[in-house]
Amino acid sequence: MGTVQVPFFLCGDGLSENMTDTPVQRTEAPDGDHIARAHAIYTPFMLSIYDVLVHGLSNRFAWRCPTQQLIELYQTNLSANHLEAGVGTGFFLDRAGGAGFDRLALLDINRHCLDRAAQRLARFKPTLHQVNLLAPIGIDLAPFSSVGLTYVLHCLPGSMSEKLIAVDHLRALTRDGDVVFGATILGSGVAPNAAARALLALYNSKGVFNNREDDIDALSDGLRRRFDEVDIRQVGLVALFRAS
Image 1 (cartoon, rainbow, N blue to C red):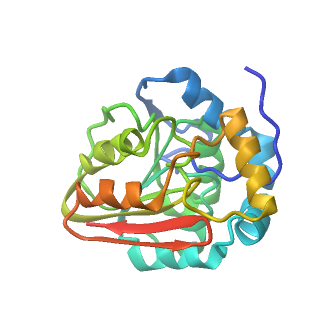
Image 2 (cartoon, one colour; image 1 turned 60 degrees about the vertical axis):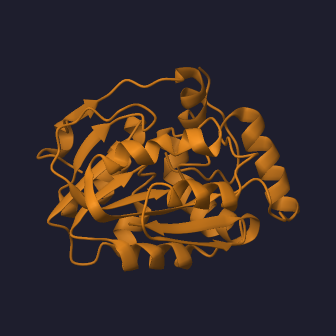
């Protein structure tokens, strides 16, 4: 499949012991064609400019959600025993990780993302797992206390109820009361500016985004059916959530 080259792309989808030969556990996943289209853009080149295009430009001018708001979401909710699902470049963990983690695991379907994040977060010595979040995560891991899921849901195919199957799979790696938090770009019930309209149309036409029907009510309802406590708010076109 050819790489989809688009500007200002926004989508988010350690080391075990050895940076140059990092072991990666893989799980197979359904809906392979749609999933492949969603993450094909994550080439080494695109990842090299991702932070500037996404966190420097798109967040500010298109999605109207300052990157600092997302960093603060991480600073508030990160635990020392953390699982990050859809790692991108490792930007948020790098900025918000502070003194470090007792345990950090990175999950992503794209090996380029895992490698990029592994290099950036080497000081935390994370483990890597190559998985599709829409498939059961067949990895034997002790429970995590916090799970980050940022800029992933708007990439996944299907309705919001279908996308939240990923949350069900991640909850299997936590205990009751542990925190799942993150953010997603909404495509319905929002008032995009010209830049956002153009990017939403382009990304959805390429299969990079799949969020035309994603609205905050569907996200909120889905999370409340799964968790006792849900905090969700909208900044620009972005829904920020915390559930436990």
